[in-house]
Length: 110
Image (cartoon, rainbow, N blue to C red):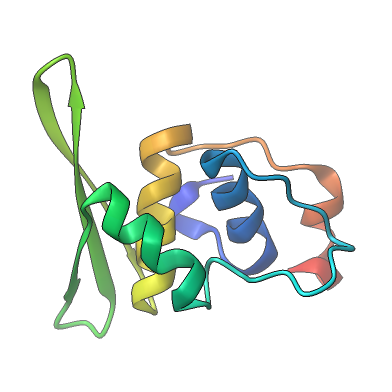
């Protein structure tokens, strides 16, 4: 799945994976990365992301990535600042196209 299209549980799973956390669908009281500032905020701060509101009403998250001093930026958009930021984080760690577990691809889970 394209990182730029991730949302909901799929995005939360990808962020958990990229962050080295364990993600389970049955986890009670799970704090969702894509909708909870108290969980996503530390990632945004740690990674040095910036967030910008686009004219199109989309949000853009930007972060710098330094691969052996060859600096480049990673950018992702989303309908909310957290979705844009978490897509950006996932892209920086896992890439632009990720294999998602089958159980997350079922329509009722999205």
